[in-house]
Image (cartoon, rainbow, N blue to C red; front, side, top):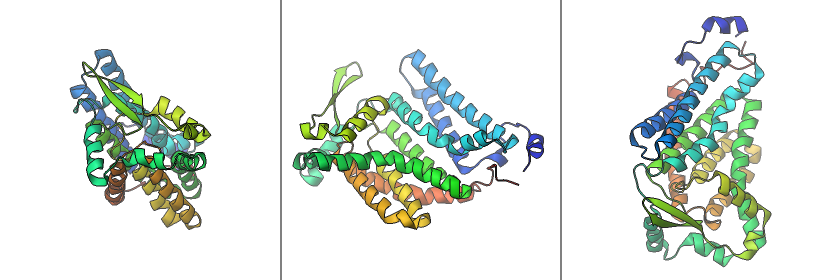
Length: 321
């Protein structure tokens, strides 16, 4: 498709022929969040206006990007942004969850999950695991595996983008679909996780008190790196189900099928990552099982929706003729 043909297509708003499944999924998620903020957010009015404006502007920016890339498919920057914008949004949308998690449930459901773990396992696995193995080499292995989550999401995306644009669309569509469903659950069911203790201050206010970690564990560079990430980019309430587990299993679903040379290494890292969510005290053990169940349910649903909506049939890339 040349620039002239793209120009004749114009900038008609919501031209569905240019949409891919991930465009539908992202815009539906943003529309749902906008409605939730509009009708249910009871925080300060100025904050409500800011959150609603940011979400709607994001929705409109996606439409502009879709239109612009369809009009100028030979532009490499637009092509890159058109492919990667969902990945670039994940962190911001995740942080927004922390602003919206008190709309339907006041407080946090950690007490319920802690009691559930006691009944199921006779202890708190997220506390006991590290207490049994408080050694720097072991803790760094787990924290490194936990950090690999960010690398595997972007890394597989880059590999598929270079090798096969259609496969890239399929990959980013399923990963995004899993993320968005997890984000909605985080909004509806706030669970902080065992790495912090929630203390009610009254008046709907809470204080998050970090749980003490062994000195040997705190000495590790990957512990410090993850501490920094969680200090500035964590959303309180995003523990159940574990999106780390759900999305990591989504990535192994793709590498196992399409990059056989790394499948066993990737599988080993994902298993370590799932274990790290508990060892590093970011998730209760039941969060891990729920994350695996979430992936098991959403991956086939996402594949079906991807095919049903035409997959990436609306996407235009610089390789189009």
